[in-house]
Amino acid sequence: MNGSRWEAVVVLLMMVVALVSGSLLSQDEPALSGDWSLSVTINPSTVLGFDASTSLNLTYSIGGWDLSSSSSIGKTGWTKQSFKAGGPLGEITLSSSLDLKTEGSFGSWKNSISWGFGDMSFSGSFDVTSNYVAFSLSTDADMDSLSLGFDVELRSQGGCGLLFNGFDLSFDFPFCCAEVSGSLSVDCDGFDELEFSVSDIAIPNLVWMTVDADLAFEMDEKELDLSPSFDFGTFGCIDLYVAAQTPSILQISSFEVYGIGMQCEIEEWTFEALSYIDGTHKLNGEYWEMYALSFDNDADCCGLTSAEVKVYFLAGGLQLFDVALFEGAFDLALSDHLTFDIGMTFDIEGGAFDELTLGFVVSW
Image (cartoon, rainbow, N blue to C red):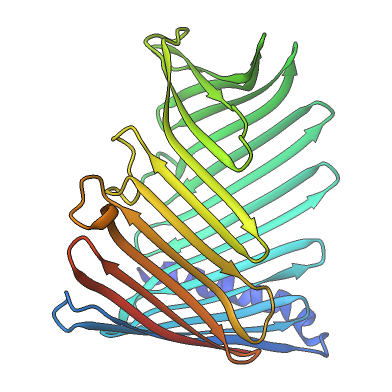
């Protein structure tokens, strides 16, 4: 980043500090909150056999503003550092974030401002990275049945002439019996695309079927895309996953049930099952079936606050009942401010222990 860019960053930062200082000094009840976490993962398949990481998050609240810092350290050293600030200045809302890369090198500085009154809202952003500077403005307005949105962006790199990088105009309006959404896009070369969209078009006598329509105009072509959606409802706690075969844009040749799901809740416990029966869809890219049992306790203290176990099945697996993978995660609160967590993964198909994670979180 050259010197002039850094000077601009410093000047803008000083302006923000000057504007919000009065609001910060007027607050007589500041509050400090945060959390510190430590996690150790044992993985026999890696060279060293383990990995460790720790993070510290701090937030100082004053005058309606939140000033926060987030630091992360891994096995190789400092991995992430970020600073954020955000809050109101009268009717205006400001936010700013600074991200530093590994070893403290500059990552990005992103700022935003928003202001709304009546049926209109304005927002802007100013971003500085190691590669470019970008500035954008947006506005939205609701006028009776018409909604309009306008976005324009300027960039120091990748733009075209006077830093212009293009703009988008979006609009929503009623037309006959439909609500139409549209957008106009202009890039460096001029007109890019004009698109109109209508969602959830009802089909007479087919209450379980709707159609989404997208009509797009480009310089040298027009394209109409019709996307049918199906909702067969639920059979108690059972969901059916259905796909339609569409040889052409207005033709449906057949339906296929490719999956069956089930979910039910018993007090604080939830049971979930999902089976893909078509041989194509997969869970985690490999497994055709999964059973899960989870527990969630909203109480802050104490004891087991959450738990989840999952069992995956592999088609034609080598183990009993085709059981292939086990995953488990548990959170145990010892007090209002201290929580221990444990996670584990067992590759049952391969007969190997994959991973064990131990950690804790201290919050205040």
